[in-house]
Every structure is written in structure tokens, then in C-alpha cells.
Length: 314
Image (cartoon, rainbow, N blue to C red):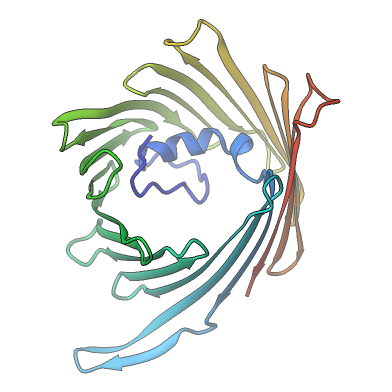
């Protein structure tokens, strides 16, 4: 729902606390949307300084500054194009400072600066910019986020949006398991609201239910997530676009964990599209994921996609 600086929940702990609107969707669609590497072969290498870098300056006492290096390569199975990126992330948790720099094969240079709890507890400042040196194309975004026990709110500005500078705002409130919120975008050039969406739901320790109205309340969806046991998870989503037809798209998915190192996922929709995913921790710091997407109504045609992802963490 919110296209600016949206972050997905790292995990679902069953606690009903306000998060960004799109993260509510992520809770209920984890069995369907994660861990399906499709149409590409991906290699990712992450390394982190073991104990941080001890530093000191005249203005502050010595602190711990941790650096994470990431190299990603992703080959598209259809075109053969390889997208690659180098990323460096500096984290100073004591000061609430995170600086991320990246440079990819398309010659896009970018940087992001995040300040958490520096101004006040629960307040985060986020600045992100990028440039393509050869063409001069720029991108610049800034956001302020406020997060407390019962409320999550954020405002941001995109100076180089496709249709001109735009302002974005989203808010989610929660109490006793119930959550509700929405987001809105305003185009400065057109002096008009370009987007608004709404969401409501209920989150319990072992299940979650959400209802969404998106695309200016033209697309409606309902989804649920159920942690059946420590090994089994299930989820489903129904979507209706009132502008196109009366048909409802329904998708169901499930996850089964063999042990702490391996799990399998499967999903299928009412159009006969089947998705399969398998993830295995080969050893500490090495993870392999395999995925496939198959159209069961056209099994003999060349419309299926497979992919793999290999991740090293050190």
C-alpha cells in the first residue's frame, strides 16, 4: 500500500502492535509471498565485522560501529541479463545511526541515512538519495516516522517522483488486538490526491485477519494467517477488483518445517497457478532456496518459471 520506504515485518510474533500498513498484509501472506525464488538465479554474500570497529572522537565516548558488506548477483533466466549490486551498511546502535551506500551494475549510486531515537524516543528520520552519473537522473526522498505502543505514523516526501513531487502519509493505530489505518499520497504538481488506501484487522498470538481497500477503494481483499503448529502455517487471500469483473481471485498457501534447517512451501490460486518453494540451511551461514511457478492448465507449454537463490552470511 505505501510505496515509500516500506519495510516488511521480519517475523510475526503474535503481538498486535501498529506497523506500517503494508506490513499488515505481509503478516497474512507470508505462506504465499516469501521464499519463492522465481525466474532467476540469485547469489548473495553478506559479511559483517565480527566485533564491530572500536572508535572514539573528542565529542563522544568510544562506541561500537558495525559494518555489513553485501554483494548480490541476479541472473534473469529469460533474458540472461545479470543485475548486480554492492552495498555497505554502517550501524552505530548506541547513537541510533545507520548509513547505507550502494552501487549497482546500472551505474546507480545511492545512499541512505537513518536516525532512530535521536530526536525523541520512537522518532526515526530517514533520508535516501541516488544518482546516475552518466545521465544525471536523480532521486531524493525524506521521511519522518513516529512509533509508539498504540500508534505508527509516517510522513514522507518524494522530490523526484515520476509525476512530480509528492507527499505521502500513513497511520496505523491498534488496541487489544485490533488494528486499523490507511495511507494517502498527494501530488504537488497536479494539486490532487493521487492515492488512498485503508486497512483493518485483528492479530492474535497464533492467527491474523486483515481486510484491505486499495487503489482508491477500487480493489478489495481479505486475508488470513494461521500458525497451526510449530511446523505448519497456512494462509489465504481473496481479492476483488470492482472495476474489472465480478470474479474473485483466491489464493491459498501453506508452509511445513521439517526441522529448524529446512522447510517447504506451496501455494495455488483459482486460476490453476501452482507455486512451490524449498529452503534448506546447508550449514551455518549458507542457505539454498529453490522455487517454481507452474500453470497447471498449460502443463505442456513453455510458461513455467523456476529459480534458485544461494545466500552466504559471514
